Amino acid sequence: MITIRNAEPTDYEMVKMLEDSIFLIHQQARPDYFNSQAWYTKEEFEELLMLPTPISFVAVCDEQIVGICFGKIEQTSGNSFCKGRKIAVIEDLFTLPKYRGRGIASSLIKKAREQAVAENAETLELCVWDFNTDALHLYEKLGMQVQYYRMEERLNDRMNTSEPPVK
Image (cartoon, rainbow, N blue to C red; front, side, top):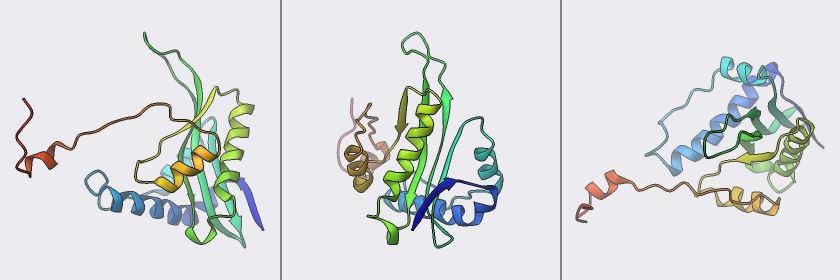
C-alpha cells in the first residue's frame, strides 16, 4: 500500500536518493545545461521544509520513499505588465521507475493541488523539460495546460558547424 504524507527532516537520505535520480535524468538528457554532479544538501532540504508554505510530500511503500513532490506556495510581486498572484509551484516530482504506473505521481500532484486550494493559490504551476515526454503526457492527462514556451537557440552548436553566422 502507498501512503502520501508530509516530508520530515529524517527523510533526507531517502529523498536525496530520489533527487539524485532526477538530476541524473536531466544531466544525461542535457549535459550542456546541467553540471556533471549535483549536491542536494541536508541544509537545502531543511530550508525547504521550513518555508512558510512548502509543498513537501513523499509517497511511502514498505517504509521506503518511492516518490516525492516538492515546491512552494508564493506571492509573486507583479510588474507593469503582469499582475501579482499567489501561485503554487511544483519544483520536483519523481517516482522511482519500479513504482510508476500506480498513480503515485497523480496522488502527489493531487495532494499539492489540495494544499494550493487551501492556501488560496490561483494556479498550480510547474516546469517540464521538452525531453521528458512521459511527464508531459501525465500533466496533460491531469488537466494541466501549457502556460508559455521558453525557446532556446544553442549558439555554441552553430559555431561547430559549417552553417554561416546569422547577420
